Amino acid sequence: METTVYIFNMSEDVWPFIAAMADPAARAAEIDENADLGDRELFSLADEHNILFIAPKPVSPEFFDYTTDLLGTKNVRVISPRVHSGVICEDILRDDRILSALSDAANSSRRLALTSYTTSMQFLSLARTLRKRGLTVTTPESPEWDDAWTVNFYGSKSGIRQLAQQSRAVEPDFLMADGLICSGITDAAKIAAKKYIKENGVVIKTNKGHSGAGVLIFRPGDLPGDYNTCEQEIYRKLTEDPYWEKFPIIIEDFIQITPAIGGGFPNVEFKIQKNGHIEFLYYCGMRITKDGVFRGVEIHNEVVSDRTAAQMVDTGFFIAERYSAAGYRGYFDVDFVAGRSGTLYVTESNVRKTGGTHVYHTALRLFGRDFMYLTYILSHTSYSLPYARPPGFPDMLETLRPVLYDRETKEGLVVVSENLLTSRNTLAYIIFGKNKKRALEIEEEMEGLIRSR
Image 1: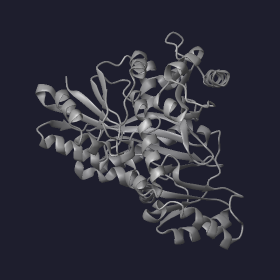
Image 2: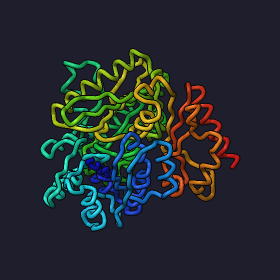
Image 3: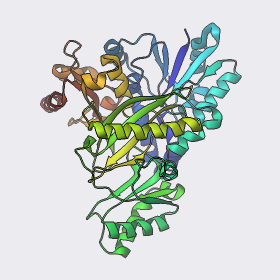
Image 4: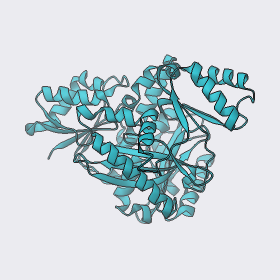
């Protein structure tokens, strides 16, 4: 049986952005935080078998046993490079131990299927190098080398905005907030200040940020009301990180959201197969902080109305057809914001696996294809724990035992990362409940157990 190699290369998705961070400590922290998400990817592999998982950091035996017991995955092996620079595909080529593991996984057939969190140029270069070394390497979830431009283009704020502008006549539901693309923080500050004074709000985005970094949201009252002072304040904020000067800057209208529609931030995810076939995966509401930071998803058939769901899926399919025709292959999502009038605006497209992909695969494994009708799902990427010192994974499981997922009732909480727990004192989890009320009750009980520990 052919082995699938999965590489968690999150930092490579936004490497130019990370490399442009001015503070070396902040840059290192960003790389380390991304690496800490690696063990969560065992849940993205929930319905896979015969996997060699190359993770930035080791996975403990206790966490590995917890995931494989819950999910029933078989023949999964985890290995990590001795050194993690953030560019894991280059680290692999410098690590004889991992190269030997890849050769062993290919066995006598000399064949490997290579997959990853994102299709970076470093990933495709790794595939090329392995082929030169005599392996037959397929990339079933990635575009070919000539089409790799689709990842950064459509995954950027400017790329999806250009697609929206080109598509306006044939797909009127593919809307984005009014805005423009500029370069240089001097002009950006002037344009943004004028928009803020006129409309009492503005959103400023770098071309391809990450996890809330590279997005500035100014709401009514956040900035001075006179133009000159407003411009100076925006300019000051833009000088804090050099990536604002290095990449295109997108300046958009601030949209007042309607929380009743998917929490105000609905989302839909797809996968384009290697043959170009488009597969709808799920829709959800995103759990977003006031500062625009993603914190998880809420998945159920009733998260949005049937009419809204149909519009999201239709718009998503339209975008998927364009991606597929351009040569993109793999996972992607479309983020929306629901305006006060109920109008849906596309905000961005993540052309890779997403913060909801591991939730989808876990639900698929535990509930089957109809999971959106059979369970109500809440996830959280980083719930801050009120402890002076991070707890160990076994201790946290013991604390949460009353609410842990139960195979009989098919309800409860799943802990999806030990790294985030022990390194960052945060809890990443998925909750399954028979309905929304029950899911929220489990989350509330979880919070009570954490407080009383």
